[in-house]
Amino acid sequence: DSTGSIRVTLWGENAFLNINKGDILSINGADSRHDEYTASGYSLNTNFNTSIFINPKNISDAELEQFNQIKENLVPTKISEIIQMAFEDEEGPVDLVGRVISVGDVREFERDDATYSYVRSLLIADDTEKIEASIWNEKANDEYNVGSLYEIENARVNSGYYNTSVNIGGASRISKISLEDEEKYNIPPLDVLEKNIYKHKDIDDLDEDDFD
Image (cartoon, rainbow, N blue to C red; front, side, top):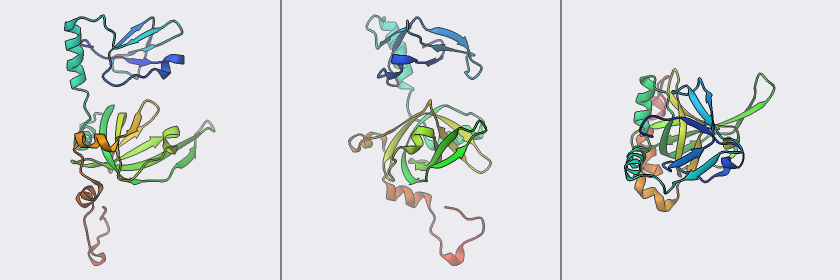
């Protein structure tokens, strides 16, 4: 709201509510707890007695205006801006929209606690830059199509030694954008993006440190 933000974890049937980014929520009866992983130091958990109302009608015009101003700022971040954020040690979360340039294989690895995790890498690009997206666990096994446009919400920015990437984990959402809705994002088609990303060189002209 106009005073700040807080993380809310939905449990039980509340986890299946059809909530979209920008919706106004009225949450009654949630539990507050200390949370060292949030900027505020606190978060909320719902329980069996929690009531959640989506876009309630009983809010004032002044409150509605404030919420609409917040909603206007909930726009995807350009990939070039995400890379700049990493350079300035800002780690998100971020929303972005990009076209898939390449899809890696699913990789499985064992954790220290003997459980298994899965990860898959996508290279995605918009009209400003490209970035690698690491998709974790259940989402790694979903189908992703080269050339298709995807919206990614609540990704974490990861600044590596050689490049910047985003992590798409349990708190993130990745959705394929329909062909009908692609126009409003103004992302170039795959062939144009590939020409912008990859530089043509003859084999004789390749150097040891060349990439892309």
